[in-house]
Structure formats: C-alpha cells, structure tokens
Amino acid sequence: MEQLTLLSLASRQIWPQVLSVFNVLPSRLILFHSAEEAESKRPAERLKAFFEAPDSPHPMSVELRSIPHDRFGGIVDGMAGAAEEHGLDESNCRVNITGGNKLMAIAASEWCRLAGIPFFYLERDLRVFPFVPQGTDLLPQPDFKLNPHLAKDLDPLALLRCQLDAAEITSPGQRLELNERGQAAPENQFQILLKKGFDFRTYLSMDVQEPDSRAGDGLEYATAFALLKLGVPFVQRSVRLIPRAQGGSGREEGELDLVFNWAGKLWLVDCKDRKDAGSRMDKLRTLIIGQIGLTPQIEEHLEKLSSELRERDLKPLKEDLLAISEVAGLLGRVICVRREQLPSQAVEFARSRGLAVILKDYLLRDLRPLLHPDSPASSDQLRALLTARTRATT
Image 1 (cartoon, rainbow, N blue to C red):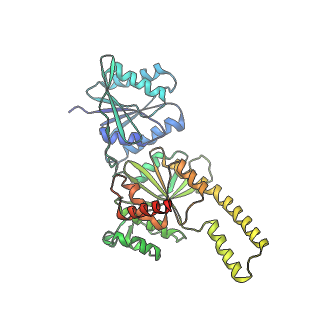
Image 2: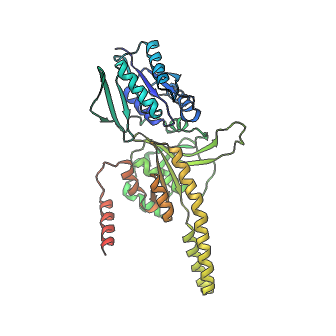
Image 3: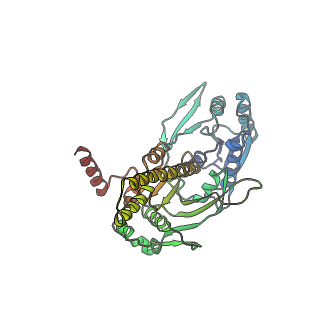
C-alpha cells in the first residue's frame, strides 16, 4: 500500500492539526507556514516537535515549508513544488485547508482543484467537510464527524506545550489517577464526602507528592477525582508556567490547577475555594451586630466597603478567566469551579467567552453533562430542572 502524505496549513490552533493527523494517519506530514512568527512559524515548529517525539502514538516524518501569507501565486507555487518533489498525486496525498488565513485556504483549495487532489476542512464541532476535484469542479462529499476520543491517549502536557507560545512549562506538577479505593468508591457518596471535608487524595494515585500544602488543594483533588470517575484517564495537577522570553526573570507567571485531554479538546480547570467579598462582609456584619449592634452610620460604611471589595475582586477575576481561556485555545474548554456564585458581571464575562462555571455544591452533577453532552439527563438533573421551573412560575 502506498504511503500517504498530508499537506496542511499551520496556524496558532493545534487541534485541527492533531485531529486531522490522527484521522488520516499519514506517514509524512508537510506543514506549510508563513513568516509570521506567532501566528504560523513557531506553531509549525512546535507541531513538528510534537509529532516527531519518540513517545508519539503515531510517529511520522514532518517537513516544514515556508510560503507567503499574502501572495496567491506564491502559495500555489509552494504547494506545487512540494508535490513535484515528493511525487504526490490524488493516490497518495490529502490536503487539510483548516489552518492559515483565508487567502491561504483559497489558494490551497485552488491548487487541489488544478492538481486533482482531495482536500478537507475541519469545523470546530469536529465535522469534516471533504471535497474531491473532478475536471474543473470541486465536488463536496458527505460530511462526517470525527470520533471525539480520536486523540484520547495523547499526553495533555505535550498538547499544552504545543499550544503555548508566550509561556512554557516549568513544572509538570502531579499526574493523578484513580487508585483501587477510588475505583471502588460509589459516585452517590461523592457530594456527601465533599461537604464533610473528605480528603480525596486517599482515592488517588500520583506520580509525585505535593511539595507543600495550600488552602484550596482539597477542592482541586476533589475535582480531579470527579473527573476521573466520569471517565477521564488521568489529570495533570498544578502545572506551573513561566514566560517564554529571552533574558526574562524566570519568575512564574501562573499555575494551571488541572489539565486534561478529553473528547478532542484540551481542558483547563480553575478551582477557587474561598469566600467572596459579600460573604466576608456578611460575616463581619453578623459579628458587629452581636457585639455593638448596627447604627445607620456603621451600615453605610459597611456597604461602601463591601462595594469596594467587590470591585477590587472583579478585575483580577476577569483577568484570571481571560488568561486561562487564552491558554486553552480555540478548541479548548475551560471550567471554573467555585465555592460560591460569581458576581453577575463575572458570570456574563465567563459566558461571553464560553467558560463553564460550576459550584462546589453541585460538582459531580454539573461536570457530567460537560464531559458527556449526549448522555441522557440523570434523575438529579431532572429534579433540579423541575425545581428551577417551579420557582420560576411561583
């Protein structure tokens, strides 16, 4: 059987490349990139290192070729040159036009039409749209959806390294999996144990022990356990990043609480188990009432302080949400797990960027539909929906 070569247009988004490769399974990948460093050239270099890594599930040779991003003829000539050099035709070549800018995609499809080589485009919902040239026409073929778990065995850290441009991993953190006790633990006891402050580390195996204990670790381990019980093979916890810059300080720029690979996406989970400004002020108000009582003047000062604290918390919260959404990439997902409901402005901000916000008290229930969107609703979900509808009509 003749070996297959896949030609592809590189861009900042790695998942269209990864999923396409694992769908086609070529023996050779030729990545066309422009001279734009952040948008095309560096992502192509990271993809080459990713696919050629010794532990890659599908090792292959990867070749990088530079083409212009703004000259139609130069793009067509670049692809024609690669095909001539490697003896490529419709029998041994396919083209992925998903990456690159619009001009590059149009030029690539035009070259395919002239050369008679099939090509395809991958949508964000994992639908593949194939085209076959016939004479002077391009004939659309029936579209199909990729298996969402096509790349389930890929290491999320390798995917993260491939995705990151402005930062690099300085510490991989812990790899968490279910141990025998965790595998045997019943799901219906999870929320009860969580409310009691159960240490979910006893249900997990980890490759390294955590160097120090911090407030909020418990929620991270509980969330990791819930994800693993829902089918995620393993979760990477506490991944630390530093800026990728020459002559930089080397100081950490952030930490990713949980990272995992699931359903054709790189998932990031941000966990915060602290009370918000409103809860802290309510506690202070209760203490004052118990000691001296509230006067109108004290109440006015408390309201002003509460408003200032909410505004102060909102800006870094939005920055945190934006940062993790950028790391996840176009085909990434971000889950924010919180102890208490976010302020309405933060909820709107998260929703506008497709970030899922889940409360600690409903952790397992609300993670399930995110990971298994096609599964039927559980009895708990149906009861919650019925309760919400009843409240809305009363």
